[in-house]
Image (tube, rainbow, N blue to C red; front, side, top):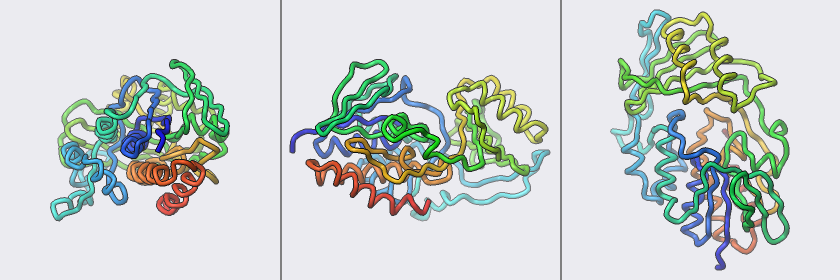
Amino acid sequence: MASHSVLISGAGVAGPTLAYWLARHGFQPTVVERSQGLRSSGNPVDVRGPALPVAEGMGIMARLRESATQAVAMSVVNGSGRQVARVDMPATRSAAGNPEVELPRGDLAAVLYEAARDQTEFLFDDTITALQQDERGVDVSFDRSARHRFDLVIGADGLHSTTRRLAFGDEREFVRHMGIYVATMPLAEPVDHPHDVVLYNTPGRLVSIHPSRGNALVAFIFRGEMIPDLDYRDTEQHKRIVTEAYAGAGWRTPELLKRLDCSNDLYFDSVSQVRLPEWSRGRIALLGDAASCVSLFGDGSSLAMAGAFTLATALAADPADHARAFRRYEREHRVLVTPK
């Protein structure tokens, strides 16, 4: 098989997983990532179901377990901080042989990057600015790197995919706000309950502190109509939105809002549904949240790993006919994502 060059946009979960398996099949993968390096923050995520055999095949399960969170239960408190309920989490079944792993998203991305980096070129602090394809390949323009030609381009660049916008159309055609927003930030201090996810809930608003692995994470999850002028890169706007949404809330909320105002590691976005009628256009295809998701609540990381494996397998089985390979990938992977 002649070696095929594949550009992958996004170094989160789907991108490095795809790069690993493509390299195993003799392809030449390059991953471009807008961030200057791997992101350290993010919600705890699960590796389970169809992602487990993918991780096993990559030989990374031991590393994932080393990074697993310490949470075993959810503790619900009222406005004065008194516990009103405590519920065991499914992860506690691991002692009985449950292979699922919960770990910080940043740790999962780091393990996947380490697995792929020896056989993959990574371009950090860069992004795609233009795509022009013909029957033989795709000419790609970058913000920083020189223009280059690839055989295929895969957009694994998330909810706000640049690849999808350039090749498929405006985000508003495919992304639907689901009525909820989420913000997360590190707590940067030890927690009182190192094995409990502590939840404080009022109608339409939730605050949680997840112990993670000693680096606790605060999450604000709240209902809200679509914000027309929301800029998902404007951190100061995000801080104002969250502060206004939680005005008057009890428990530790006022203190946590002060921390939010000073945080330089804040994630904020709409919980959104991504649906496209097709995941490929010519030599360009989409993967992970860029193609299909309900962000935050849809097993995104596990489905991203499973989809990456399916796509790599399809391309390896039919390297001379990318269109047929893309159709096979989409047909097989939609079986998993459509119910979500």
